[in-house]
Amino acid sequence: MSPTHDGVYFDYSRQQATLETMDLLFDLAEKRELTQRIQGMFNGEKINFTEDRAVLHTALRASKEDIGTVFVDGDDAIGEVHDVLDQIRVWTDMFRSGQITGYTGKRMR
Image 1: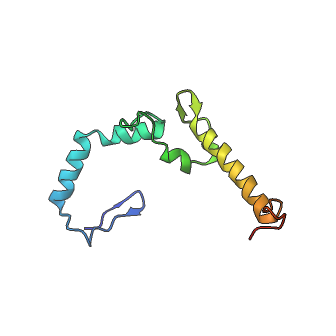
Image 2: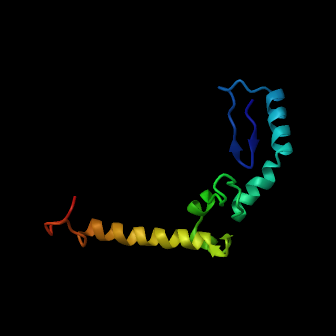
């Protein structure tokens, strides 16, 4: 059983999944409104109910072109992620170039 969808090849050959298993999983996903929950994750909705917050895995992987598309509590989540990534880039570039030194003033390696 190896279906292809949107150019993605799914290989279930090492799993004990049957067509019945897949039908049951698809039925469960539909009953639990999985598609809507996934869309909620992409939209920045608070779907982590135990911590009452959004799960922003998608914001961590989004490109700069996506800034301004996901807001959580009025804040641009992707913009904030890229602000921090830019700060990390500046620091690591300075570290690698030797602009940031250790206690002795020598370059760290």
